[in-house]
Image (cartoon, rainbow, N blue to C red):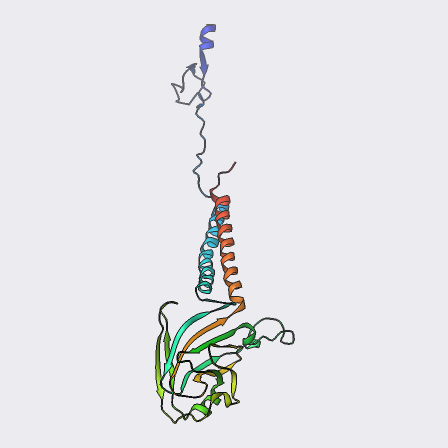
Length: 283
């Protein structure tokens, strides 16, 4: 046997026929004689796994809810800053109220109390808050005619009893486009008799101040229906007052700052979740 030929040829493992050493296929049965040297590697398509999807959903949700919280907190702080009257009060000044009658009334101020049975909180024996514990109202007035001023808060039933038969103007609409604009005020005349008493002589007022110059009244409201009565102290006709109205809500500033800070934290946490969970390359 030719040794060189035996070294050059090999046998087909399928049919046993001689095939050349470098042949890829058997010429008789067509069987592949050599394994392919090509190595197939599964391509990395760069898709999102479950962890990345969860990170995007959670981070996106946190970013989404942070936006209205930020705007809400910013709005509260912005309003507090624009209408700041000092001492924690927010409101407006330099409002002119005027009537040719003896009495000017802002009526139907309805103050609702707390229904402690529908709110979860400390037991009433420990703390039973009233409206006045959380809200204070400040009313300032000064006569444009250098007359002595009277400002009073009266319960609606007493207002009907003492002023129901007298002539007065009452405020039906009050609007301001911005803090620096002049307000739009409309009045309606209530016909009746002449006032024959001086307001300071009546023992009917929930809160009152009177005298020359600017008078300031601080009122801690309770639940009920009230009228605001503005007069000259001597009950003379022609009431012409420059007034300021403001309210103090001690927790308002804390609410604004808390909302804004909460929005910032939520936004930062949401961005961090998306970045570290779905964007940052893996080492």
